[in-house]
Length: 56
Image (cartoon, rainbow, N blue to C red; front, side):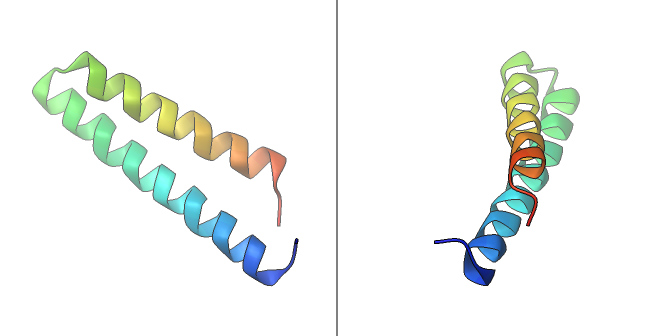
């Protein structure tokens, strides 16, 4: 199952999560919304975990 397509998919997922985290954290900071900050933090954590566990 692992191969170039698998690594490309993981890299795409990781970048998507990191982009979502940046956008959610910025929106949460601007609107002073704690739930947006929380969701952004969890997206950042998920992206970091993918980077640490699956190093293509």
